[in-house]
Image (cartoon, rainbow, N blue to C red; front, top):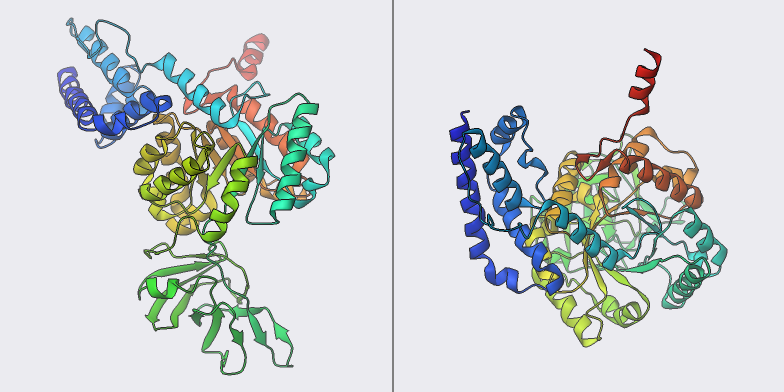
Length: 504
């Protein structure tokens, strides 16, 4: 490709970016002052990514110019810098959009803005590296303040209280222990509480076995038919055959029977069991199992259900969440918004926070459904009307919803979008899970943990070995940041290179 052709293509892209910015001026003006800078650059990035950039990037890399592949935080400045050097190559002058002064969204300022947004949401870091560590507290943290001290010493900087479990009394004790331990250790540790959202799960299974004893599971094999009933208190036994040809289970939220359609996919227990819905009746629907472990698997009560193809008419904030919201905003620094799907969901939460006088609390959008992923731009623009915003990449649920083969691609996209909007993101789900629970990490877990260094925060789940896991994760994050920040290699001197020359 000739230099003149490169210039022509980049000028088309630049014009599209400026036109998109003009078109979205009202949207940019609607966000909180903390995010004016973010919203403008985010619009530019979205406009940039409507183009096929691979051939252009190849040509720029071949010329030794900074490519547009690393321009998430300073989109227009980077495009215009490239145009400036290409014109210089031809002995010409290029007058950019901000030719008479510094680009307001530039390389150096962008890093500072992301740091400011991160510190406002996640607190001041106690570490020498950027990525914070969030830990899900176990129930015994309510009575064991020494555990909190040990976690803080190991590197915890955000304490997560999962409001899907325990009670307000237990959450309060946990929060009090975190506050006290943080003061005693002279460390900053913010408290994060989750709004659980609608809990779409299998209801209580109570099945009569052959010997008359009650069992809390049904065994599922490939090719089986499974009938899902609206009633959550269904007794499988009298009146239900539980034969080889058809199994029966109840569901926790019966209204999904009204929403599902034949041909849609359904997943149980984090994707371990999958099926396709074949028919829907007034009180139940029938599905055929298309994925299950060879030899069969036990499907138990309370296991999660995912319906990635179904348009669910469920409230983003069910009654239980609304009941707990006043407690959460009183004791938490930031809250996780589970099952958020649309911009109107975000708007509803913001309205409730205004009523409670806590517009300032950090809002973390948990991206865990296919619908939420497709709506991320709208979700972020709406969230940026609040003064303190983050995004969690809930990789486990996303893998079920979008397919495990897509999760690597999707988590990358979410990292790019967050960086372009200067929104801190939290890398979540099963990070060093085996290490936390069993004390032994797999190679794939270590690799995954090293990839998480590109996020502003990494979330760990609870486990018997959680203190040591926090220590190891902190060590990994510190080592990786010496080599890479976001997508860029930092080019720290390599000892292996120095040793080579010292020996030769």
